[in-house]
Length: 193
Figure 1: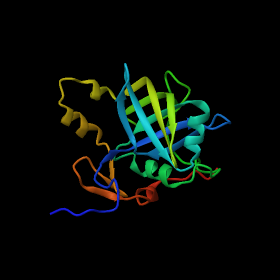
Figure 2: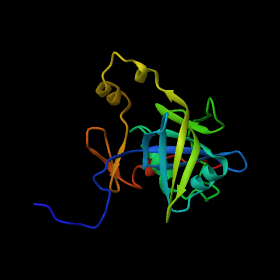
Figure 3: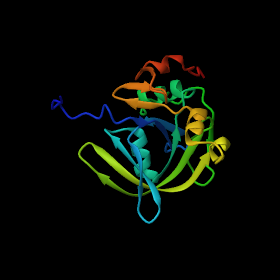
């Protein structure tokens, strides 16, 4: 038996990515997002949908480039912090996190992410409350074991343990809950200087 309900995307598990952009002053900015998927238009690309007004979206609109860093269980506290702390807050990035520059584009990347896209916006669609960015993949940085074709996809996924989001809950790759949005960030360390 099924019943009609209000539209929600609760049972569309989404992998989590932290998007990296540069602020106007060149310092890094990161935000956590999940509406991310692939598409094909003569070449493989990715599309990223960002709702509401956010600094990350402002910077993607301005620079047309960003990184998308896959989030693992180990990275969840910092990713949750990035997703639950307002990007317009001046002290958001006063946090302990290892950052490098992209290899192809001028974008910040998270050192601990095992799979990183360096993306250039090809075109975008402005919706009522969201923007969808269609991006060309300019580079992929992959943790070396993910390139080992002798390992099954399952073995490689178990090596990196990506985090999924359903509703407002984080899940392990095996479906076990990692907590609700806003909980894992309680384990982050803020810089005081």
